[in-house]
Length: 218
Image 1 (tube, one colour):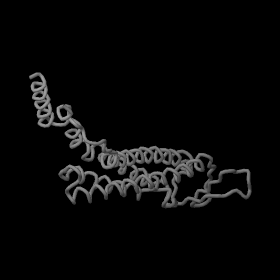
Image 2 (cartoon, helix red, strand yellow):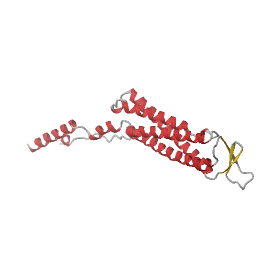
Image 3 (cartoon, rainbow, N blue to C red):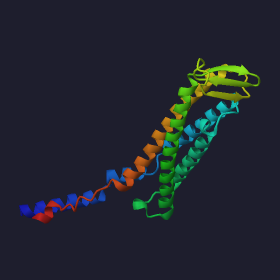
Image 4 (cartoon, helix red, strand yellow):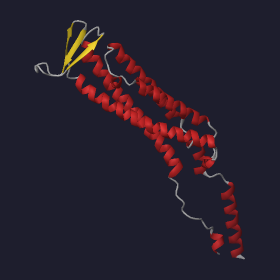
């Protein structure tokens, strides 16, 4: 009699467990859809990177493409647009929708590329920042000629055209390089976080075997 009551109570508990919503799976349906916050951060940081690059071009037109990474900001803005599209796509468990799978795969690849681009921009900006902080510039005709070691007669020189004041090259230009480093560092962290969220949702799930209810062991 007692065993029958115990078995029926276990059956009721199992039925209630099956009918009740699973907190992890229900929370995953909200969290596993790409977070809107990260996509908006990517968009804002991409715009900021492009704006800072164009501001550097306003100082002088002689800067190289790697010194004005507006292209990186534009690419990362496009990455954020794909993230927003992924957020709007209807989420299905186990990615049963081809559209959801394709957009998520595309976004994962673009975030990885964005991470690499941000790291490259940080490397270039850091190199030029160390150079710009040691510049000694003087005007020679329509150009500003800068050297890293004024006492060295064979030191490398850098010529910049269309500069209103040579002081901008020693004050504003290093500041823009530093801002560029910080923005791309934040962008790299956001891209890495987006890749980690999607990887964790897709692959960090391990099969632990079947859970045998206690009433089946009796």
